[in-house]
Length: 339
Image (cartoon, rainbow, N blue to C red; front, side, top):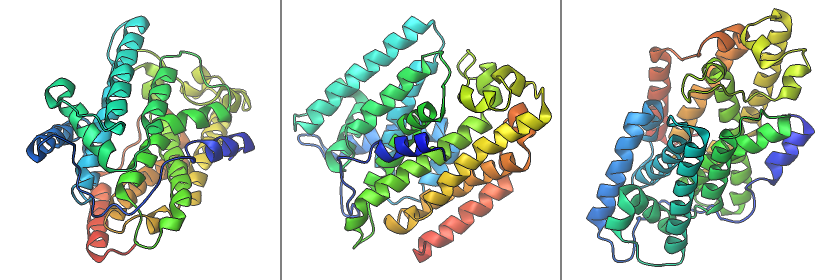
């Protein structure tokens, strides 16, 4: 990884907050009934099931109630993303995001301050998120920095260099990694490794998001999801090989295009390798989820490494049988608790 990107990852999100043992935590809120919280979590579970099927099935390996807590994190991040991606002119999408950001900030402030949260006022997403934040050590910066990443998505300016891309990857993926690790918690006796676990989670987030960027290059460039063209590969990385996003999409210079994609893939692969210890630090009951998700994303990257052109021309996917085998191995590992 380039020095600038290493510096960015090393400085982002590693201060504040704690990672602790969370196996005995039961989410609760003052003056809110347990059945109300359960119904709110069920709403977030359905959002995850319908909007992120692979993620949903992977998370089913996480024991309750930590599984539902992570559903609430996903549902919140999905809502933030939807504010940006739903059709509409830029000013409308920005207004939606800022309204959601204001609502989230108010909810976090009341929750952290110990104020009573009105279930009817905040809705199921707000109630579930409040229960999670009140019960697990998920730091507020996770939500604020995610919003910052969404704001960056509204900016049509492409990333200039690796440092800008690393910052973005932290905002939209590293934050999710920090939230998950805070909820999964550490295995007994590993509390002294909390900072290391956070740093490894940031690395894993970089790996996941950089894999996503390569996998989705064609769809993002064509505006398949958002309705507008987006390019996440840094201009510096493409110009180094005499390329623009347009030339890369057209595979205009096969040797240069292949070299560019392989270089970006190697940065993602490096982050998988640098975060390899993460599964050994978190609670063994939750490690199967992370292991399965990592095997899926690492497998996607392996396909890109093997055939760079395919990734630029269409979306790379894992075969259903491959994902099934990953799920089986993760389930066996969950029963044995060996990672």
